[in-house]
Amino acid sequence: MTATRNQAYAHLSRWILLVLLGLYTIYNLGPILWLMISSLKSRADLFAMPPKLVFEPDFSGYQSVFGVGAARDSASSVGVFDSLMTSVFVSTVGTTVAVFLGTLAGYVCSRFEFRGKGDFMFFVLSTRMLPPVAVLVFYHMMFARLGLADTWLGLVLIAVFVNVGLATWIMKGFFDGVPKEVEQIAIVNGYSRIYAFLRLVLPMVKGGIAATAGFCFIFAWNEFAFASILTTTRAKTLPVKISTASGATGIEWTQICAAGVVLIIPVLVFFYLIRRHLLMGMTFGVLGRR
Figure (tube, helix red, strand yellow):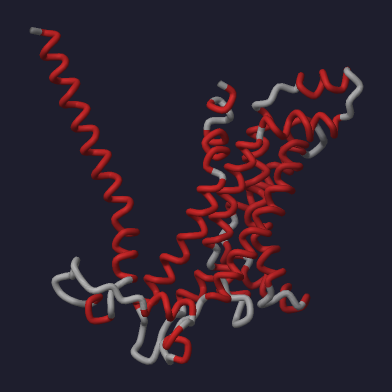
């Protein structure tokens, strides 16, 4: 009798847990689903009360976003293809450079003791604590003097500056998890430290590199404060372009929703490509070494 009761309690607890997880999933995915639905509505259906869940799909928002078809010459077109390409380039190159520098700096800080190491690590961490508004004026003046304002190169440098500190700290943690004996054994057998680093240590932390790249890509992709001040026309990123979307009839909410869906897709593709390494990185390689 007691065993049957315990089984019933376990079965009920499992169902309660599944229901709670389902509600939590709906709570998190609800805004994204609503964004996708709204991107396919006409302006009349978008503002209908009560909200319409059954409607005829309208792709004019996506046509306006990419500037194709009749929307190309429309006064309300908010074509963002150029801004999308800018965001892809800046985020990809900025993430690559930041992870590369952060990997080298993290390895040095993990393996070597040098004067001022603690101060250096604190300085690197402080770059993440610094609010963007505190240095916006400085960067604006400096970039204007150097001719980097409203350029892809300037945005790449900003992406590197924002993410290199985070990459250094994360990669230092992963390198700390690799025993130093790995390099010592290689050096004793006549190999150089560079060889040991490239052929032995790096493969062991590739999951950490993927996880670091994922975090850095998100921060670079969503960067708004610097991009909104340092760009005007030629190098606007997608978040900045979406925030200024308006047409002859006011704010074009359908087009903004369509652009929001487009903004999400590259991040999903990027994380899909690194999903295996990302799981290993988030578990510090435990799953990958089983």
